[in-house]
Length: 252
Image (cartoon, rainbow, N blue to C red; front, side):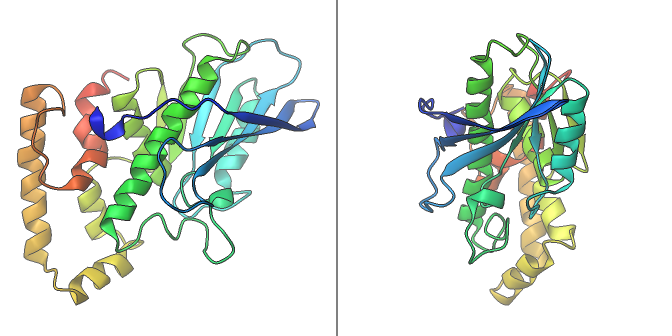
């Protein structure tokens, strides 16, 4: 759809880090097809763990949780999957790990009171994953039509959105993730500082309830139309919600 259209990346850079007995480690980098205006954020990094001693393997993209840092639980998943013969590709989400600088904690700029920037960060993450799929498709070592994905928490939300948009990702495992981002945001403890900020700037419970009603009406229109294109979207963040694309992600 138009909101997620992007120009395909051409200059991918791959560096071998280590060759091991069970798997080989590498780092892929490429310019994001969606620019945020933060130079430290607009290069995408992917930690790669590919099985050694194999000619072909299935690919699994991994998307980590919000504010995860280097050597987090998702990297453990990547290593374990590689030991079991899968090629694993851990993408650093916008403003996380290598995509931030010393002034900021990993992920702290992804979800902020600036709604437009937060939506754009999510949008950038989706586009970056589709750009990674472009690169994976060109790898002779990867079994054709074998790309899968695992997402944790924030990564799981992004996974479900991506799978509704890009059918190259066949199986997906969503851990601690679902849909209805507005509800999750309003009721979640992790986003309490943002809710307090909104209250201090005039937002009230009735405003959040109105948005929830708007989303129900929007989803009904999207389902009736069978697609997102052509349906008026009253709030920008409806375009990042996994539920918006759930009907396009069946039966996967």
